[in-house]
Length: 325
Image (cartoon, rainbow, N blue to C red; front, side):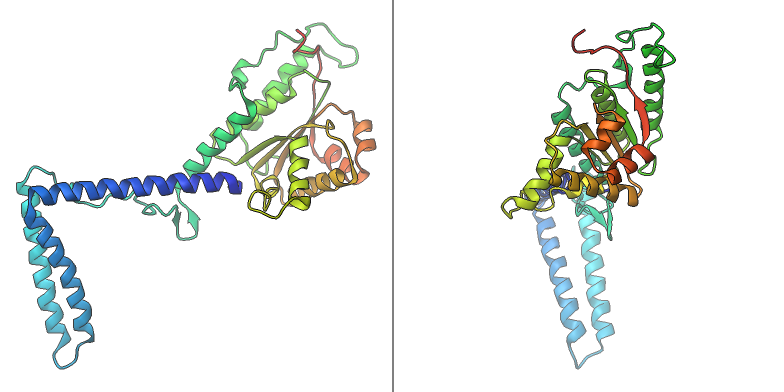
């Protein structure tokens, strides 16, 4: 699961802070043990010296190295046994002097070989939730809080059903999409007028998919295009470099309010890059827009329209502006 560089940087920083704190805890326990039982400090110093002697013996000539190594090994074992006796006889407990890494799997590095460890992955998920909460704000965007009673229950000839029944179907579809999500789940196009719940259901999906451990980037179209402009035309520094990679590499990208931005040749090019790259790499995307199909095609080029309208599953929203109600 690909997390943005910013999320990964914050997670790594938290893991490093936790690792250093654990080292301080280990050192404090060791110093307390040495203060109570000075012989433990002497033994640990001697054990370190035996390791140095072992290295020197391996390089020495003139005597049988096997015999020297055996003597050092015996001495080492005797010291360890004495150490165990002191710990067992004392009031510290058997695990008091055991070095306790922040993570038993990776030792606090965050990686097991080339694979991200579960400890770092969990911190990434937490940081992503914090980032998502800062964007969404209220934190009430859950499927269980989605209100169907604000949609008219009267039959619409145009829809072939009532807005409430349509939105009830949309709610079930979105809940199922989030519950069964994988990066290859396919893409959705939320279409409808302002204030019909597109942003709310997008946020519900974002929260549940994030809770399931997938990387989600949720942003408005305006901010997405601003990041592309900053990376291309802004000063070359750490704040702009790689800013757009998160839009291309996350498991789920949600673009809210597409069509509210000032459309230029650059924004059209950036949108094509995002849509086409994610489609070619089989990564899921959700786009919400107030534009009709014809408006979408006029505003953007036919290549983008064919990819979005032709391959995304259309979720039509209907009803009356909830904000006004």
